[in-house]
Amino acid sequence: MREITTLRLLRFVTGTEQGELAATIGVSKQVVSQAETGIRAAYPRVRRLLAAYYETSESALFDARGFARLVPPQVLEGIRAQLAPPEDEPQASA
Image (tube, rainbow, N blue to C red; front, side, top):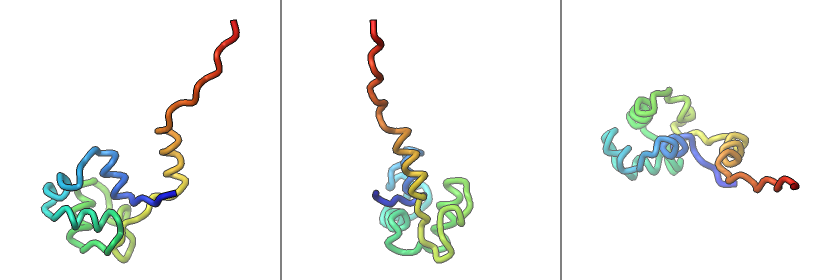
């Protein structure tokens, strides 16, 4: 199962493009991408900007070292289950 960060999930849920988010908070698209993927720790300023944008705390989005938090696997499984198309219901007998 592919890992996903809370940052990426929030951006997906809000329907925001990376470039749009970057422009809104005043950073480059590359900075947003690196923060979302955990390629590198986000600078304190970027952490503050992203937390403010999503109206949450920095600790909800980043660990103590500044890396984006991962969404727990059980949460992802629940989301995937809700997004899955409904299984065909058996036809009622006449």
